[in-house]
Length: 139
Image (cartoon, rainbow, N blue to C red; front, side):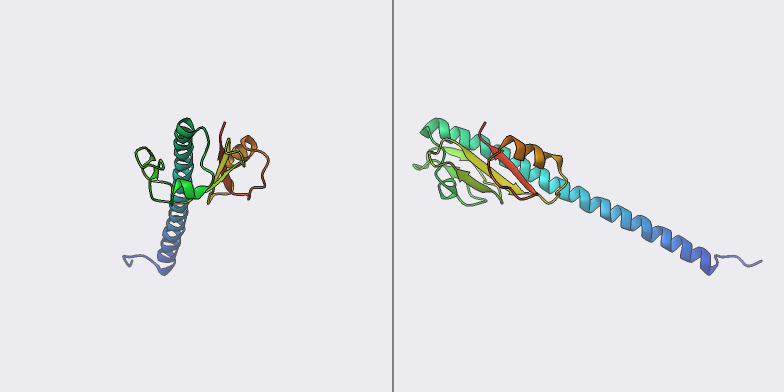
């Protein structure tokens, strides 16, 4: 009797290892996607808090995103004495109403099946959003 594995046994083991590796890699990429989306949602909520602080000081929200600043930079008062947010999110879209008494923030999430997308769009009605837009508005 020969010792060792047959070619068929080796092929079966290799295919099982390949299948398991594929499943693990796929699950890891889904986890990373959800983590990036979670970060985007958290950053948008933090920006909402910063905008509320700005409103308390100025009795109006910024007229446009230029008054907030560039992504990655800080969100300061016009005189530079007050820092509302140390680092702005890398991605966000800001829109203020004409009278600057309300605003809408949105960001595109990578996972279109995230249940927070529909809930956020329902909480901020009145605009046409893309299917994967997560939205935060003033309450």
